[in-house]
Amino acid sequence: MSRAARTARIERVTKETKVSVELDLDGTGVGEISTGVGFYDHMLNQIAKHGGFDLRVHTVGDLEIDAHHTVEDTALALGAAFAEALGDKAGVTRYGHAQVPLDEVLASAVVDLSGRPYVVHDEPANIAPHIGGNYPTSLTRHIWESFGHSARVTLHVSILRAGRHGAQPDAHHIVEAQFKAVARALRQACAIDPRNAGAVPSTKGAL
Image 1 (cartoon, rainbow, N blue to C red):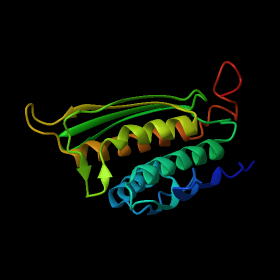
Image 2 (cartoon, rainbow, N blue to C red; image 1 turned 30 degrees about the vertical axis):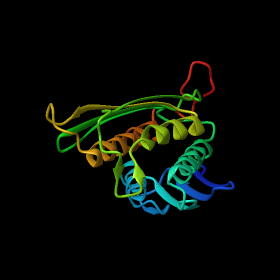
Image 3 (cartoon, rainbow, N blue to C red; image 1 turned 135 degrees about the horizontal axis):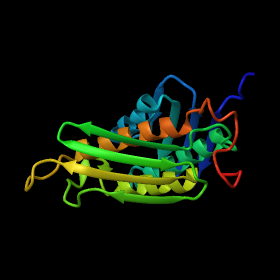
Image 4 (cartoon, one colour; image 1 turned 90 degrees about the horizontal axis):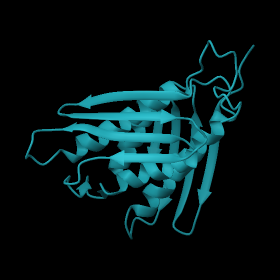
């Protein structure tokens, strides 16, 4: 029996931004990303590639002010797309975890498609304030909080190692390792469990 397509299309329009997200959970890792924030585009492509999702994102935001609204609203729309594509979550694995190294950095991500939004984020406090000119590193935590609450998932993201003691951590590596780890954890959690027979993986019968 064929399974219904697990896809979503989300349009989010505010006074500051206009965001369009298209998502296919059962894709091949194709990403087409345009937010106007180059490093953020690179990170969202990690979600597509390492999650095995087809993802198209187009955002027009008030970058003449700063990147905050653009980054936040894109994360909210992305989370909403995951929530819509997952539907009632029947048959999914539900839990996913990954540890991803990027040279000297080791990141961990654990996800539960719980229906209960909760986000824990831990990274070094002394990383560079910007990457690529217009990506404030302070927004990384906000991305996971916005995504997790919109997707209605429990998400823990941590940096386990950040380089040599006393040296300033590499901000690019720290953020990129997080996105790759989250992508791999989501890939595992969203996968269909062949032993599940289409049931919702919860003793409550609902997620």
